[in-house]
Image (cartoon, rainbow, N blue to C red):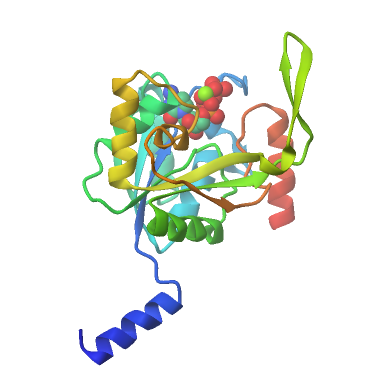
Length: 244
Ligand code: CTP
Ligand code: MG
């Protein structure tokens, strides 16, 4: 490398140069716990569907190189209309979801061809910030796997048959969110192994934990809630208000 080239690459590193990433967004659930009789991702916050709020974060992130969206076939027409209406251009692939979140993500993963950094982010978490995405991607570039979360605030206990069996040391407990970021080859290996061993996890890191890859945790914020039940809509409106 020439001196000029070396100096430029050093400057890039100093500025925290980041490779582009792609993101898988599972959106193929039914929103049963929300109980509104349709996919909760179509619920509007300040007049815009949750799905669009989430997609916009990535649409507006210059480091995002493409979105792979997993959807339920019954939502196809409505989602397509919304993507057009809000001019979401980065969705490269739309795949059919499966019966579980993990199956939806696997269907999406099978369409990714390059071996860069891949993120998985729930469509139901519209409040993720670009700053946190970038910190996560930087960590995953370094270690191969990184997830975002927040330290547990409540005292946590183990309970069995309605009886407390143990107080778990809180300082070691984190509530984990999405996005989760991985080198593509690592995530794919984890998914192949999970399928082979019939393992069903509630997040992507739990699949990667079965390999021996270390997973780094990045501290996010408590606003990055997943809209799950009705009361979350009130929290969501409050977060929107705070941000405006
Ligand atoms: N998801 C998915 N495919 C599934 C199930 C869930 O792509 N088979 C997506 C959801 O659309 C959501 C994310 O995974 O963006 C997290 O799932 P969750 O919050 O559980 O959403 P739902 O499954 O839709 O809700 P519920 O479990 O209450 O039915
Ligand atoms: Mg679900």
